[in-house]
View 1: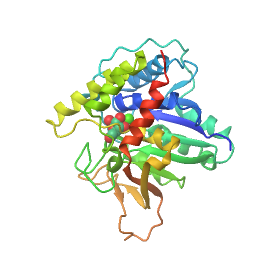
View 2: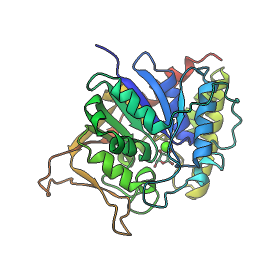
View 3: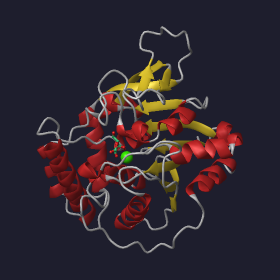
View 4: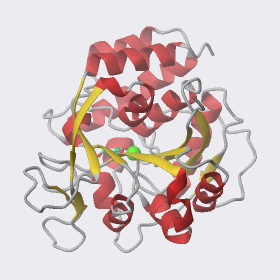
Length: 316
Ligand code: BDR
Ligand code: CA
């Protein structure tokens, strides 16, 4: 079987950083065509810079990084500096990138990669606001048959939001983009808060990264302790930080870690209290056909074991 081509669309961001490292160390499972960046947790300037620095850190400067959209399609967008730091990576020093700047816009890179692929040859993983992916689908609807699946981190099915009482951050930050992507007819997998809140960063798990000998694992430990500290401070200890974004990449490597159900999902782009909410038709009352596989449960230790294994492969 030929390997899927994967595009990782991100807004690093501390959990994005771990998703990038997991993708870079898992190229036996898929071909990582490139990393595209978008404004989200922090500004586009920082997300692009961080993604390039992370590729350098992992010793993979050949993996290309593309700069994408600087703002949401219609709404004001959102930032999450209070849990990612002003620079998006908790102030952790990362190496200066050596790869040349890519001139192509992220949206055009997504389009070109899909057009060059066989039908169902590309999987896209958006782990930030879905602005780039939505604009690629608007600019070039002919790419739809080329996309096998969109595995996104975002939304929440049956619980509270983390940015408003109803909405999760990535969807809140650009609900119009999310609605375009979810309604595209392309198969979707939603890694929402229902499942990602189970991937808790415990002290024991942090210690594992600290005790690995490489500079990369030490950087991961530093980034995750900064993230954990900021989440604990922000929530008054109610939450201690979870690894949302790497769940998408773990799903590509081993989908048996996760369990979910198919539901009809739409995004609320209109009302104020529910702005950015993913409305999931849990009891099939709309009569609409299911359009998203919504993940609800995970084997969190299997997920961390996979992550430890992959990060421990980096020796530098
Ligand atoms: C999502 O929001 C961002 O802050 C994280 O990077 C993740 O993608 C979780 O709601
Ligand atoms: Ca993210």
